[in-house]
Image (cartoon, rainbow, N blue to C red; front, side, top):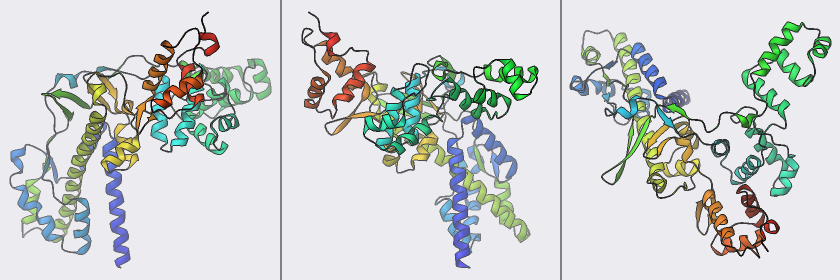
Length: 452
């Protein structure tokens, strides 16, 4: 019996956690829909004003007094240590939140690196992923063999294959495919198309209609419909609409006021929710049948849980954004163009939450800052070891360019010599890494930089 009770408690805990994660990840419009659903299903929850909650406290305490058995008490302790009587949205009337705003969009490389850092936490896997992303062709193909990457990075081939397989699932669909044919197949898979269009791409790529018609025994009209689906795809995934302006309504506002950074969560369409005083009075009544009271207590527990989870959502979003603001303060204040290195794990460990929870908070949520509007994931940045700290890769690139700009043009520096200069400055960097960044910056090798 005791064992069964423990299992039931754990099941309730899992349900509460699952609902919390769903509420955390929900965009504002979806959250509004969830609140409407909860209001429709639970009469204990009402929309109202703060002054309407004065008599709720006594009634809510009935939940503790009347749920005497061990199961109910322990579940209540899990759900909340302090029973909330209402949920008051924390928002102010701000015109900035009312109209869609222009948002900064990262380029394709930044977009892929952000997904990489969200997908992987292992340093070696991130290094492999960065190498693969850096090696993509202008069309977005990855033409190297996994064994080549393994040898270049001195890692296991299996790990390379694992990372490559995950990158191929990234947005945009078809990225890191070997060629146009594979890119099209992956996009068809993403759309859930597994019919004639897939067979044409898979078996008869680049063949004419007559050949396909003859070999498959289908009509020209069927082939044309399949070809129409294929024409909607992008054989070169990297040539998508990257860096174009789009418009979003930010969910978080970050601003500096009297020298202090403030983080405000926009809940402008979230109503003031509270526990129903009318039903609390019914619970106190001696005339109400016990079965009805039992039903009401269950609804009361559900209402209490929902209010608490809304509050937890608010607290967790604000904590994460406040941490990001503090970490990236110099960037937000315009003192630097570089983001400080920041990973999902850094945020999770600092705040004492799971990495997947941080992921849910960052994904698809936009913040308005003095420097523009960014998706929260934008503030994740990789780093390079310098002494006991990490600096951003863009800072390292800038330093390499400075070294090259100031070198003796008649006797330019080799990659190994640049690496030595950087090592003396505290960077932990190898010659081949310098070569990679030099090439990325479009700086020719030593022999092509020499001037007589």
